[in-house]
Length: 465
Image (cartoon, rainbow, N blue to C red; front, side, top):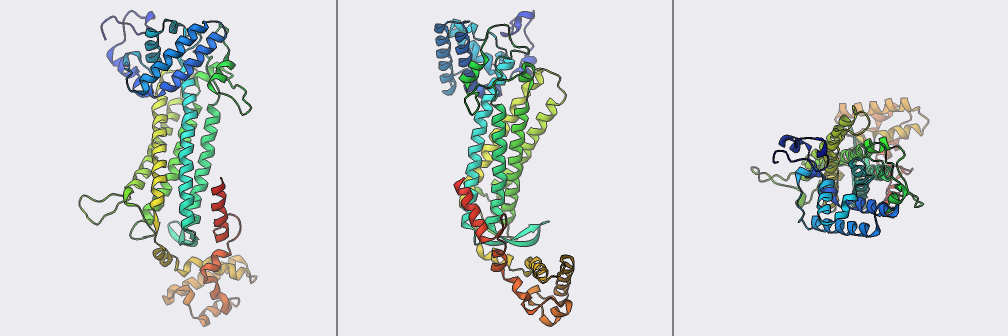
């Protein structure tokens, strides 16, 4: 920057222009230029409001709005020059507009960059939430499809990564559907929270000019379910509030955690030790050294990116926690983490949605794993309880049976009945029926359980949703 050149937006107070390093640390246009469509939308509404209250003429409004449309067309065509010396997306657009439309010098009347950026970001959050929700819905649809294909594939369910009880693979997959459905609720809450218009709050204390905030809110779609405009009720809060940023990053972090857990299951299931599923070639890679390898890289990357989403949330919480009211320049750094959370969340959701249709369950390997009779030890406890044996006593009895199985190195369901009968009088010859896998699953027929009818009903529920 030439010596003595002043900053366009606030240079009147200073005798010299900012140092080069100050420009580098102060610019945000390198990352906030993606707000251009929302900035143009907000500025068009601002011009309409100024004309509505008589501060500018209708002709000036029309010229400003046409000029903004022309700038946005250049931005979308990749023909707009972003000047870092103008700091941000807002001033880049305003300066370009003013060069073409003299009336644009009036556009910033009764508006600060503080409430301008707050408005842009709330518009962006509404858009971003819709995009994330659509990607969540696609993952849910893919999971439901895979669940429908694996209703008859029975696998061990695990606790502590130890075989616990048998479940259908479909029931296991539908657990993630429940998680992602909760994520959709979280994202919807962020959108609702962002759906309140801060424009008109000014830098901190509004304006003495006769603006119409409800008019702007209507223009920008900040309305409730009944179409009534919604505007912020405290100007100081409106320009310093970053709750939507934090809640959006939190929702993305939650999605990331759920995706990471899903990825971990598929990484384990596709290993030679488990062999429950085969992953599609398009979402796996080989080794540069070992030709036999088929690595689940897509799911490993998803698992890794979840940590990035958690870090973005932590960054926002740390940045905001010590700030006094109202605006502080620290808040310029609020955008990179939410933009990154958005980009990475949509990317990994879309990756999962595209990968799942190519997943194939290995029914034979699953059947071999679920043939372990110890998986139905709890069903033997239930068998005894039905014979009026107190649960704690029944639990100890089955523990003794397991001990006998280990001592004799004989599967639980193959123990000699004469030895079984000596452990407890309630163990009749029919105790062996507890190891019928089909009956065991069918008996789990209450809501939320992995019985075939319940699983089928839940799949139908999500289909209808």
